[in-house]
Image 1 (cartoon, helix red, strand yellow):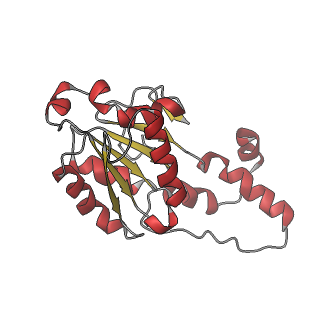
Image 2 (cartoon, helix red, strand yellow):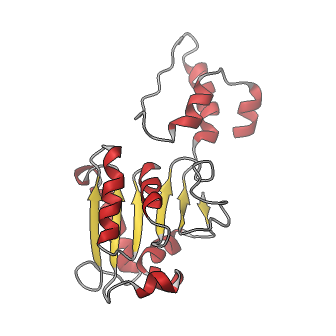
Length: 202
């Protein structure tokens, strides 16, 4: 689900042209060659495809690393408690924009460190409930991006699982406990899905 009226191409363009669409106060502090911050909760070795797509999108918007843009990568290696310090380090490098990816904790950490530098995130939980944006249509503040809210279909998935394995007494959910995306799933998996759940998610 895209919010802030961003299409996919516009989402990438926003990263490369932050000096055009964000407030003058943020622009005036940036060097001639834009520095783009990339913050991710995972590891570089497991995100090669994501990095390649990120670079490709930037190049389509006219920004090529080491030519007319600098990309500063920060990886938390799965340790969420490292993200605040990594976000602060990007801010010290005077980045023009921060691409916060790899889950909800990355944009949360970036948002807690700056109210002026633009943040473009990909959210795997509800950004409104997390207090990151005012609404999907008008996110406000210094943050925008794309929300991948999938919890609304979890009840349907759970019911289908019960139909496939009716004798299963226990359903396990493998997650990383600190992530905020776990909250809506806990509510769903604590109860048996009803017909109303199925009709609302079909």
